[in-house]
Image (tube, rainbow, N blue to C red; front, side, top):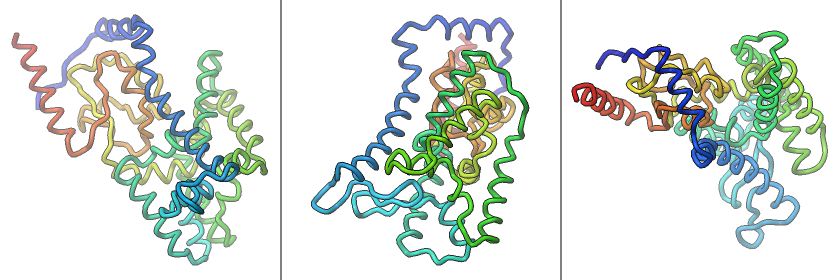
Length: 312
């Protein structure tokens, strides 16, 4: 493997200038993953809402998407169960029905293969609120009041499981703002909007990405599952000028450690939610989605192209 290219501060500044000089169409194209994520998030909510209130069906007496984010059924055939909720219920001492076990296996299998924390960026309704708070926070230039370690969410994950064992209840499911928000949006009862407002204010005034990046145990659970995910953000060290624009927009900037990216050739951490913010924002196109089995060969090709350019 060739040595890591050396880039100067001038190279980094040139990359930033290239980003800021993008045309209107190029800027809109750089928002493509944000637009797709919103379509995904609101589309999931719409399917739940349409089934519950408008009787949406794929066939006679076959609802489109019934239930909630913890346990649902798609087109009357495919059970979908939140594996973290299933784990809490099991630890609490309850017997899981076969349908719940199958549903948990399906969901966990999808995220193990595709991307563990994709739920956080592409399905969770709270993400819309935290993204809005983060956007406004940046515009207002609000500084964090204090800092919390991102590992705190893993301690909360363990605490939720321990409390489930002690109380005999699925501890996080009782207080989950994700579940509360979903129930209020779809069924019109609960404290969902109060929970969302609290998260918005916390992320806006206290700590950027406070809930999703530091506290949410569901995100921590999928972060652990994400270590095996096959869809990754590939890194091309030959074109990266270390301008840092990717880290500015990433909700989990610690996953963009350049030294580790250079060593592995892709974002290895399961904490990456595959939100897609970094890939279109990169002025040099150094970050891109790719499948893990193909990354090594694609990076070798990029190395070869880089060597050819230097020899010209």
